[in-house]
Length: 89
Image (cartoon, rainbow, N blue to C red; front, side, top):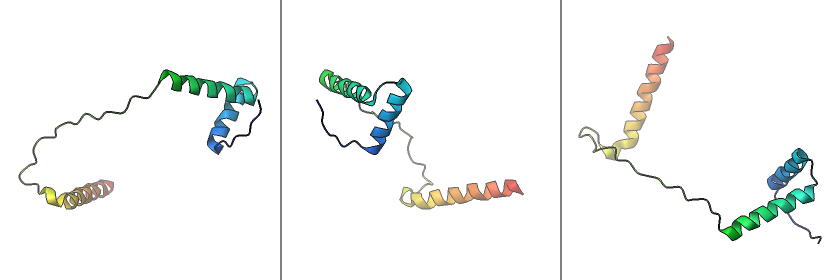
């Protein structure tokens, strides 16, 4: 059966590359990819969601005011840059 589809440029590029590398006709590659995608959907294949396991970094040190974290970050960055420039001399 013939039909007209609008395919995103990057998907089209990948499909053409697959067809060229395999030496098979473009329509065969498109049909194979569609069949694989549909069968994966029917089987319920899904990517497992990413899970982040939090880790404790301990309590804040008394000398560090967390309300001024950006200022602290700027100061540490300035110090690192100054040390790097000093090593270049």
